[in-house]
Image 1: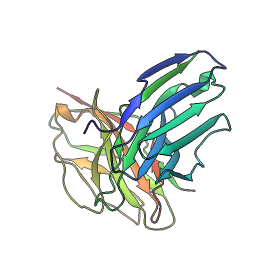
Image 2: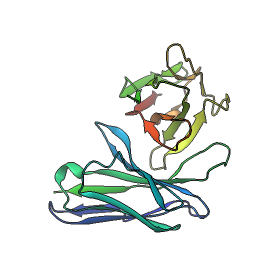
Image 3: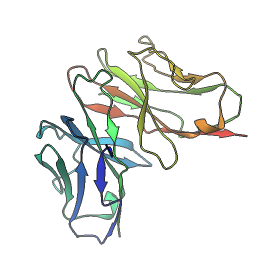
Image 4: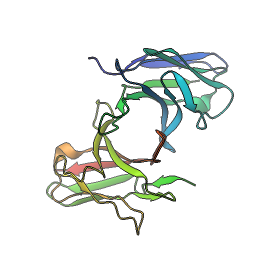
Length: 115
Length: 109
């Protein structure tokens, strides 16, 4: 298994543009998480899904952010319109309920730069 | 409010010296605590969790409910321990994780 897959790995865009980040969780995992990592705030949970249903989106910073999970093997995080303060590394993670450690498996991250 | 505090952004120690990465949490209840680590050019991964009470790569962490702390310790640091370390809390009954801001550990030769 290649683990959690994220694309693109790097994204540079101009302020005001729409950005879509993609994630493929580990096959069979029923939880999917989106995180944002910045120097100032560390790792922040934005939203998580269970069986494709959003459970908690209280970490989504503004209405400009939206996330979907149309099926068990794909999720997107969209920012529209993007702003320079959205520049960060965005991580996707997945886990399997009842798998002992409740460990989250992280993807490699997408480094977003908004100019 | 639920919160995880890692007071040190950067911790530098010499090889062979003891290491302690501090983590304090704020939660009214009995959360589950974790340490995650990110080595250079690798993915963030679980290092250990308090329920397991195990030692991983020589690291241990004891949950102190009185002081609401979950400090990560290793008696003798090695250069390969250099990495970013995150302390995290999970509220019981949910899968909502709260991470600290992280501590970068540098082990000097």
